[in-house]
Image 1 (cartoon, rainbow, N blue to C red):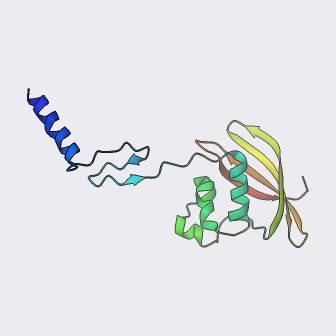
Image 2: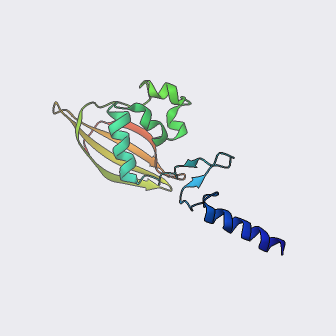
Image 3: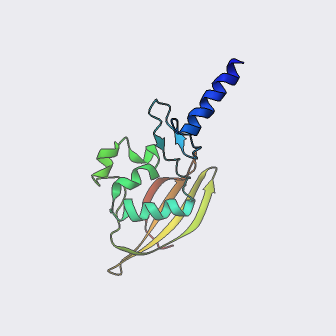
Length: 150
């Protein structure tokens, strides 16, 4: 009987407009009293997306701070996010990239190596060896110049 009385009061309040109905939301909610929706996490980047973003940010030295989450902790050499954002990072730069291509070299476990060929706006060309690791998402594990073109 008590539940029926409470249900009647709630229905009457909703009909009178005193209480707004709670709408279902697809966004996750923070566990707090404020119930502020937070954005769902981004899906992990594919192998090609990781390589492209790494080349456009860390290698080209444009918005270097965006590349911090693209590399393994070992590659960062203990650098903090603010220090990484300064651009003084352990990545050999190649400026003004107009063309980038890569080919698969080899794989060992969850480590993949690619030969990356870059061309600059001035017509300079260079090859690099790029290592990708997949601990839980694709991360760049090393980047070094190659003496021969791939």
